[in-house]
Length: 110
Image (cartoon, rainbow, N blue to C red):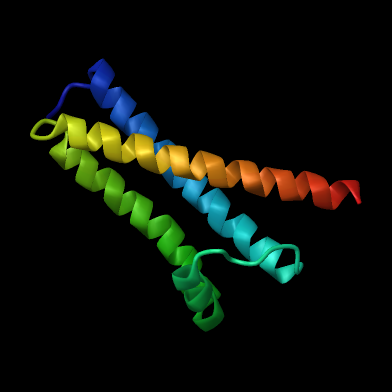
């Protein structure tokens, strides 16, 4: 069993943050679409949402969980890849979350 070293804790934290931000994105995307406040920018996600919003939301939960598990298993053999992948994913979702917060504030100020 792996010790929870500082770097292992960082992997758990980053993977958890990635999961939370992806779920936040999924829920707010569906809410914004239902309120006709936004349009989905990603054409693949837009097609998936039009086919099955539940599947879209399931993927927003499932994919980060899989990535987190994969990164945990690769943490010793390819630490740089794990670090870059999680930092990239968290960075993208932080940016997306800022857009969501912006239109939420904008919507509530109208």
